[in-house]
Image (cartoon, rainbow over all chains, first blue to last red; front, side):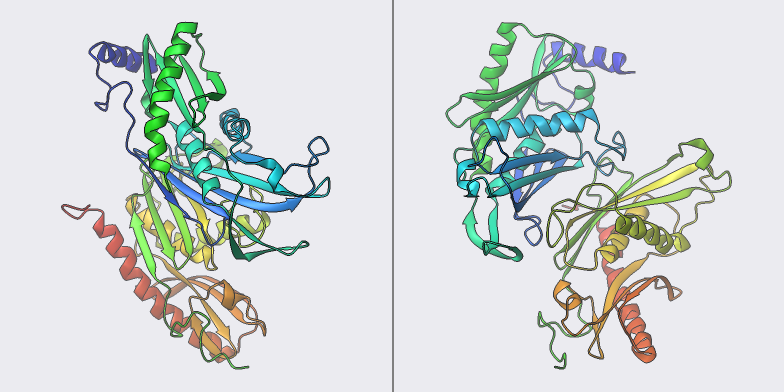
Length: 259
Length: 235
């Protein structure tokens, strides 16, 4: 089945056509809504890319810093592929896809130094804020990689601390203090099908990819995280082209997230 | 202290603002979103599809399988741990029982109809919002139904009947009875009934009558949302 579709897709690619009529480097319409769970979560956002919808929420807790980073807060990223969002996903323990997804996003957030972890420390080696991001697709129409990363980043931007008296958190009262954030990274995934490099794949395209590269890019256009996926290799030249494309697209996407 | 005025200024029979939408999950056979005040539920129906493992199949009719889940960040306190809990399993079960009386599954032997309910934001009445959304999603999926199921939680607070209680009222300091109901309004039958707290016999009767009236109002909104999906020039 996928072989036939792939053949058809590739012959169309030769004519420069994607199934939905987009250009190879064209994104579907991206939008973000902040505070979708403002009553419950400390920060939340819903990101829509075409028909793909992802919601992310941030909860803050106070805990003990890790022994190897006693003067820093902690971060936890979790993505759960809800069976609600696609007939492909089944209930049960996390699949390797959801684990990879959350670890790739974790890396983009952590390595870009988007969150200033030292400012999350309350008392050295005793108390710190723990930032917990939970990501859920509500409809998977392709490119969960980017939608999930963007939802997580936007949710962090939306965070307001709950009231904390040094002992207990009062979740019913929110302060006006946002998280200590620096420059927001953007995470974009590029796919290779046949000899073509495409961006923002649909589900049909995702099913036939040869290789995949997810790139986290800083505001200055520096690479801060990367993950290669798929069953085929990439040449150094191809990687170079992909990164160049990501840098160009990151600038466009950034404007959507101006708050 | 008598409870004469509701915390959020609503009338005692007044519902919180409701927003209902159908077709929110494009991948699903049917789907709906139901917002009541700050409680926000998503429901998606997949199926009828073949039931696995096979020994769970019913050769005479389709099986309804509901799954209620709160997103980890949607609780009112700490993060909710992902995965099923005793609470979510029980709510999934009562949701099934609330919906089953209106469904005709005889056309789908060996099949399962999966209903996934996810709570994005919560402020009490989550199982009721979930049932309202699930009923709309089932109708959207084209499953034969005799009626729509509408659901609401009614509180008995200091002898007063308060329709559609929120979290603040649920935590009322002198205690209250939280009555979660679901109804098939056409024949006036109650398909979900769970009570937490004390209520006198006549208070219970009044509460159920109030719930019936509220469900009639909700039903109008549910049906409007279903029809709106097929409106010509719908935006």
